[in-house]
Image (tube, rainbow, N blue to C red; front, top):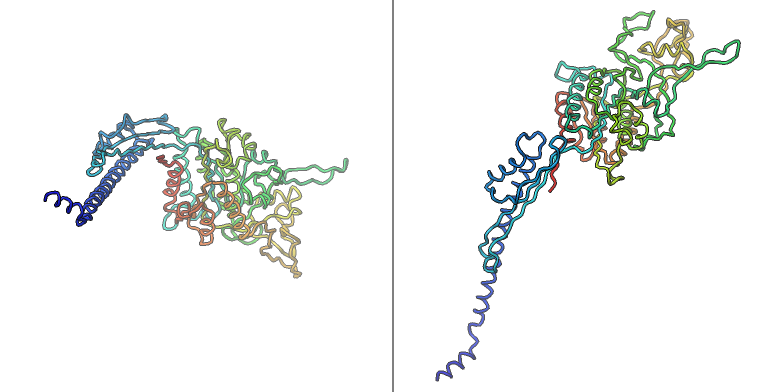
Length: 523
């Protein structure tokens, strides 16, 4: 009887699914529990990593006065992870030029469900490292000192040039500090209607001076050559704006400078009018000729740079493209040979700067920056025809006096030098009535506004292609000028282009300096 019951039970198939269901239910519970354990693990690991990152960032700051290791430990303690640090936090660097801080942590998390698989705990690791330092940095600070910088900042009584001087000085003060000695160089490029490169760069690039000849010597029949002016602006061939590379084979010629007073009204000497053409504030040379208006190349001398900034004065037109071209040239390694002979370049930078681009040299870790500022837009720029610059009297005339306009008249108005003041590009106008008529005669146009914009965008594009970071600032500029500056900036322009009425100029320069000396997190 008992055996019959057992045989019947063995043949019975009812309830077999229940067994399978129980097995599957156990598997589902284990898998669901594993998910819970893994979510708990990831949540705690992310929190530990966040604490670790914040701790090393705070400890690595060069202005951190507390012991770096203690800063890290304090962060972990306040977060409740005091016992998770593995060993001791590591601190490197000299604490002056750079500081590196690292930490490793591990948090053991007990499991609820994985223990059924023999896994009683999970180890959540966190490794962080932070370094503050600027490495090697090359900067071209390109500032607008055109005549409009003499006007006041909107809504304030301070002049634009004064605000620029304050902002640029603060910028230099932040970058050229003892902590960064031997790492940071700054080239100052003031520009107005032209850029004065100074006598050393003028000579280094093999620029030729404008000369004139005197009358032939009756005894010998020969003429002597004389220098027409002592300015140091050079004409750059326009195709050179399509490259960052300095071309020593190009022809660089001295500009035929002249004074063109753009402010106020009045008459020329001997005619009605009250214009003071000797007023230094209104002095408007095509080529700025003060010592403080010259380029200072690849310098780490704070005093030289800030003294030059303090001596800047606004005058002349606006050639943003010329300032940008020279600023980029001073960052390009092709200019290293010419830079080596400049007295502004300290010994540690001679024959090493401008450094190679990192993309071309795996051993180069330099970061290159342009900071380009304007309060306007590119303006047209004119030159004097060579035939009106061909003797001593004309040279003195153009270099000495400010011209509110060029005279044309039937009787040829004369200056105190006894020279006919002719049109810049041809013969004086003769009205035929024997009366003096005055007006503006169009000079030789070297650059139009549109051409200046095109050259600016050419060199901006080439600079960005070389991974030069381009910051641009438009201070109370016209809409067209703002558009051109935004287009020139590195992308996305929202990070590298700034607009201001002038009130925030100091804060903008300070922000750029902070970005250049940023705190970099290496995870």
